[in-house]
Image 1 (tube, rainbow, N blue to C red):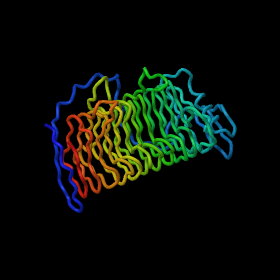
Image 2 (tube, rainbow, N blue to C red):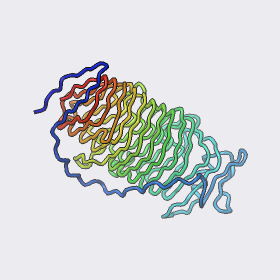
Image 3 (cartoon, rainbow, N blue to C red):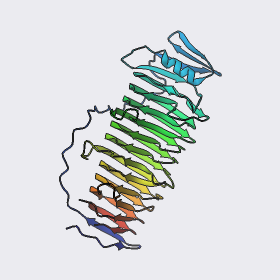
Image 4 (cartoon, one colour):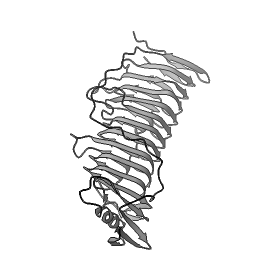
Length: 394
């Protein structure tokens, strides 16, 4: 029988509480969409180093795009120069060719640089986005392609998206830095054709500040490897995974992500981690750090199949952690701290099945609380240390 633990409040005291529910063996993993693990990132080369097939170079106020000894563009338009360099690459190629951009300039928020298949882009400078636009415009855009790579990219200004990739395969985003005044940082999805997964995406290191939406968002991705997402003062989530499976994330580091909202430093939604109809562990996160902002960790809308090794959350304005209608989620598998801010909450909406197979463990909770309502199925609270905190669990 599950037992309702008494509400414990110990102002100025420390309590060590362990409540263990009945655990069942993990479900057998369902067959996932075929995916090949992305290779581990190598040490990043300096921007522009190495061989290339075309380049766009700024000299004074003039951009010149060249392939070999041939000039394919001369003028003042950065976007046109970069696109001309890309268009000069071998037609019908089946292996990657590389374009290096040397210089900084501006492009309109209503325009984009499009990458075809088998293209590597290395931007040694800054793209500043100005004006307004609508739709899926981005300084770097690709749709229905494969084998694309962005080695370095700095974006400032007001894009709709900094990078927008849709229905792509075999993608590498290397060192990405975005200091924005609006928009979404990196969006990778399959929403052009939801019958097909976007597959095999590697994101090495992304820094996003000032975005009005998420720093990084995925939707419909099978096979995701993320190094570090650093989010500063973004309007919504640091990293949001929607309907993404077979993902490994090393670190999410967010400060003031989603302030005043229900978004989180790290959020999973829309059946994220669900493979077929099951939730075998396939979302693995090394560390989530959140300071201020909305929530720290948020799992919602039939997501799960996830483990987070380390958690460090402080002074979130909303729930430090909210687990709502999720399945097979292991929080702080190695260690964690929650200090101040909103409570750790396990909850459920009536339109979805209740929480199931949730583990909350190895947390030191200071000046906060843990609350489970309604009672989930096979919930485990283990080795959690409460400091000036309370706990109400099943």
